[in-house]
Amino acid sequence: MRRLENIIIDARDIRATAEFWRQALGWVTTFDDGDEICINPGGGDVNDPATWPFPDIAFEPVDDPGVGRQRVHLDLASASVEAQQATVERLLALGATPADVGQPADAPFTVLADPEGNTFCVLDPRDEYQGTGSLAAIVVAAVDAGALRDFYVAATGWDLVRDEPGYVSFRDSRGTGPFLELITREGLDRADDRKNRTHLDVSPRQDEDQAASVDELLALGARRVDVGQGSDVTWVVLADPEGNELCVLSPRE
Image (cartoon, rainbow, N blue to C red; front, side):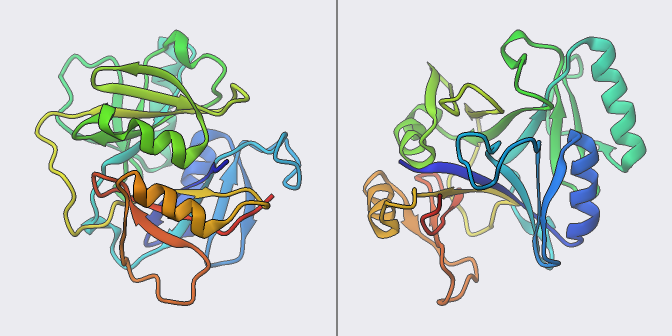
C-alpha cells in the first residue's frame, strides 16, 4: 500500500519559502540539509508510521519556479470568520500578497500568494475541516476529477471520502491531517510541457516493490516524464493521466 509522503514546493529561495510556510501553518522543521527543507505538524515518531504526521511539505530549489503551472495549491483552515481575517492579516505581514485566480468578488475565501508567487487559499470556517489542523486540503485542479479518482486511490493509499460530480476527496485512513481534493475546473487545459510548481511524492511500504508500484500506476494512465531528474536518482517521476507530476519514491518504513 502506497502512502502520500510529501508535498513538494519548488522555490528559488527554499529557506525563505520554508520559513514562510512554517510560520503560516505553525508547523516545525523536520529536515534541513541545505538542499531540501521539510516541515510538518510534528508530534510523532519519524520511525513509527502510525504516529508520524504525513504528509510533509518539502521545499526544493529550482532556478525559476515562475514558469510552472499552478494546478496544485493548498487550502488553510479557519475556525471562525474572525480567525480567518486574523490569519490573512498575519500572512500579509509575513510577505504574502493578494492574488487573483478568477475567484468571484464575493468569494468567502481569500486567495493569497506566498513570496515565491505560489497561490493558496485561506478558507472561511467549514465544518468538514474541523480537526484537520491548519492545513485543510491539498487541492488539484482537474479537467475531469472523476476520471482521476482511481489513479489517486492507488497512488496515495488514502481513503476515498467523497465522490461527487466534479469533486473527489481522499483522506488518510487514520482520519487525521488534510484532505486531498480533486476539483474539476472548466476551461482547464490538459497536460502541457510545463512543470507544476507543486507536486506530490508517494512511497511504497518497506516490503513492497517500487517497480511494481510504478507499473500499477502506468496501467492506470500515468506516463514516465523527464523533468531533469537524471538517471541516478532513487525515485521515478510520473505524470498522472492529466499531466500532473508525481514521484514514486523508494520503499520506506
